Length: 272
Image 1 (cartoon, rainbow, N blue to C red):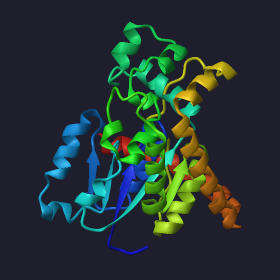
Image 2 (tube, one colour):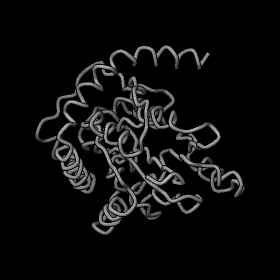
Image 3 (spheres, helix red, strand yellow):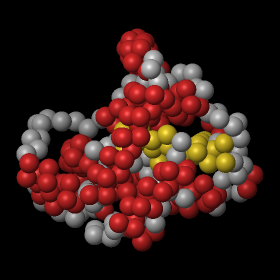
């Protein structure tokens, strides 16, 4: 991996990205990073684009709920990474967060309508529920809208897939998070990638997804499902290629059990 490279992490909502973000930030000095704030996404992206050349030249790590394409504003060779999640699992997590977090942009609408999970996935309340992962990875402005349902065509899917092929040396899945983390560590020659889980949705009652609900989600998120399957297949090939990955995984998980409580304490102290 060349030294003069800028890493760009596209944080797809409800994929485990907050946990990964904490790990990635540790790999860079504070003056080398820039985070696009999810609570004020448009203004934060505008602020990034308006940075002076001198400040943008220092950025080695950029992250956020951002569409593909911001590498055009950086000075080093870009390397993108992201994590995808199976659409069914992602929308369950999305619903729990929207229903439980008063700071979530959909909270009041979900609460006022007293939405069930089935209501939520059919509501068209946000484009995040309609191939939201493909939208961001395509980088196309035409589909990057809050009320953009039905705009994710085969062309959009192909663009997202093409971007992954050309700009993403590694892409992970939430379901194989630790495997992906070990591959990242070795690819970028990092050291400390231990973690504790961040921003986990509270779950008071487990949602039962029957075949009817699964069909609704998959029909509304066909591009996300195809992209997930494509990425998962590529990830499986990398996992099988490393004959020692199983041993590395066991060792990492054993050590992470020791270090994760310490990281949690450290994180709490830093926020004081």
